[in-house]
Structure formats: C-alpha cells, structure tokens
Length: 287
Ligand code: PDD
Image (cartoon, rainbow, N blue to C red; front, top):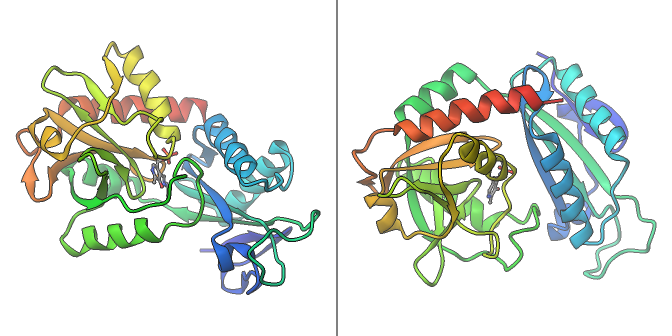
C-alpha cells in the first residue's frame, strides 16, 4: 500500500514528508485545516469545506495558497496516488516558515500546504454506528474563536483522551451555562421528547460543521423539524435520541452520556435514517 503525502508542491512518501521546524503551524498553531470524507474516491460536501477553508484563512489573514480548482486537483491527485477510495482527506495550510516571532512574517511569505489521505473501513464504521457510541462531558475550556478551524486542538485532544480512557468515543464540551457546545471533533445533536432535532446555534463558540449544515437540509427535506437551540447533558439523556456529526463520524448515534443511557440506550431510528440519507446525498454530490 503506497502512502503518499503532498508537501509544498511535491508528492513524497509519508515517511519522508516533513515540514520545517520554524513552520508557524508547528510553532504557534498558526494554521487551519479541513477534512473531507471520501466516498468512492470523491470528496464529500466539496462546496461547504472549500467555503469554510476560505473563511478560516480569511479570518487569520492567510492567503489561499492556490485557487480552488488547483487545490481540488492537488487533493484528488493525492487521493489517486494513495489508491484510496473510502477514507478521509486532510489538508493543512499554515502561515508558512519564518524566524520565530509572534507577529506575522513579511507579506509574501508562502503558506505551507500539506495533504494526506487515510483509509476508512466502511464495514467497521457501519458496525460501530449500528451499536452506537458513548460520550463523556468535559468543561468548555477552548479559546473564543472555535468557528475558525485552526490546528490549535490541545483542549480537544485532552478531552478526547479523557473520553478514550473510559471507553467513550467522543467528549462533549459543556459551557458555563451548563449547555453542550459541541464535541471535540464533531457537532452534537439530540432528538428531543417532542421529536424535534436540536443542535447548538452558530452564534455560540462552535465550529460550523459542514456535515451539520448538510444534515439540517437533509432532515428538513425528510420532513423533520430542526431547531438550532442548545441542550444540557440531562436533556440529552432524557431525549429520544442523540447523535454526533462530522466528516469522520458522518452521523453517529450516541447511546450514553457520562455512563447513563440516552433514551432506551440503543441507536434510534431517526439517527440511523439520517445517517443513510446523509451518506446517499454525500455520495451523489461528491466530486
Ligand atoms: N473535525 N466540531 C469540531 C470541533 C470539529 O473538529 C469537527 C470536525 C466538527 C464537524 O465538522 P465537519 O462536519 O465539517 O467535519 C465539529 C474533523 C473531522 C477533525 O478534526 O478531524
């Protein structure tokens, strides 16, 4: 199995793929990233991910390293060279390499661009979805700009590790009002007692998940009511269903929060149906 990365204009074996020690992504987490689900060799939700990439870069005043068309070609060529059909595509764009100084380097410093592809075992992930997963809660302790998809993910990594240590798959951050913001690498949802889908609004300090946005459409097209309204962990446990969304998890049923069951403790019909509908749509619109 070949494992090829794209690094600043070159396709190289992953084992030889390196970035400079004074890359600002490494020194200051001064970098943004995107992750696309890959279905049959094609990128899911292309428009949503490119739009968010451009927005994240714009918020940090980092130049788009190349046009969307050129970037798409690089992503697809990396996929092709890795011979992966089902997986995840990771793109990172940093402010580039410069002598260590907190303030920005000289204008014209080229951004660093890295692309990698990893394989996903769809049989295993479908089996996991059919069983459902547990989440644990964690106090919200991230910076105030989680809407920008930066690689500054230390609080997310620490929360995820805590989850892993107790056999949970995700950590849900809970803010000072006792409301769930989102997961460490996913958005959080419930199907409440009235059958209404609820997920945190984007006025809150959360990432505007591309899967979240597509799923709002999918759910409404399926005749479901969706409200961008927060919920507490107690409300999640009392809900009919809960689930998470993201490029990695797609739509994944949550069956327990902090060790206590959600609803009857099994994946619910709404989450499973939305998973199927989301995947169908993502496959149909992938490029
Ligand atoms: N994570 N919230 C956070 C904090 C995330 O990191 C992610 C994605 C999401 C879901 O966003 P989307 O639907 O656009 O994937 C929400 C990616 C998959 C990751 O870090 O690997």
